Image (cartoon, rainbow, N blue to C red):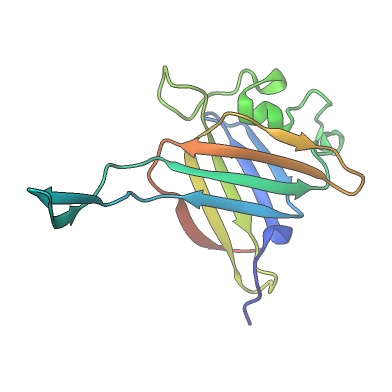
Length: 169
């Protein structure tokens, strides 16, 4: 039986162009993205003639996710309080200021974002959404009693995400 997947079963992975990663377990939230191109109407002397494909458009979207901890417990992993937060990793700030962009040299800092959503039926497969060359302009962070919220709009220099499935362990 396949059960409904949602962000409660999710993991968010932020990667740079080298080997740096930041992983967050998600509690709930919303993820949306939009891709494709708008058709163009071609007219002949003012009358409708036919449709053509429009220009390629960049992938854009938003992520709004609740997390139980904005900073992972790195002490058990040999890390420290100077390890990056999602804000740092998304915007190449603070401890992530030396992270490498996945974009082309000369372009603004870009990351690879991977969202993995497990199937609650542990025998099922995990859904994986990968967005490469993702650029975040503004990050909203809210601290709360029960959970923290991380939200941001994004634009990616690609035309569509990669959506696959993988075996879950």
